[in-house]
Length: 160
Image (cartoon, rainbow, N blue to C red; front, side):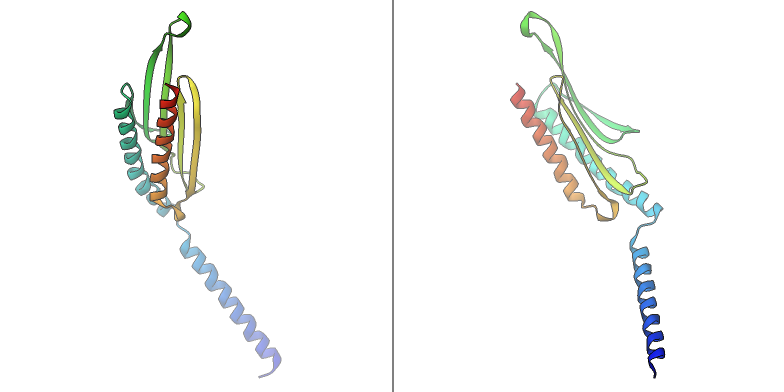
């Protein structure tokens, strides 16, 4: 076998290796329908976990009411509370809210968790976490929900 034949075979082996690598990458990449299904399968347990955590917050701090959220912003829950503020001889309202939602499916194939918290009319935090659907660790998202609710509870208790 001369050099030209060996060169031709080496080129063919390289081409087959590249094709095998591309087909493996394609097989690993999720199809659009699979992504939608995966998002829906993750969204449901996460939104239920969000609601459970916010209900426990409401149990700990009486006066909060919890509503389930299912709208164009996503799925989750919101805990709200209105207090009367009698400071400085004036009557006013102090609004507190914690909203945690799983954003709707998007073209970027990510699971997005968003949270916004307000304590006594002041935004206390605005947090967001996302991860590619193919790489999502559901427990990590559950832990984030719990940590965000705990952070909010601590800030709310400190605000008096």
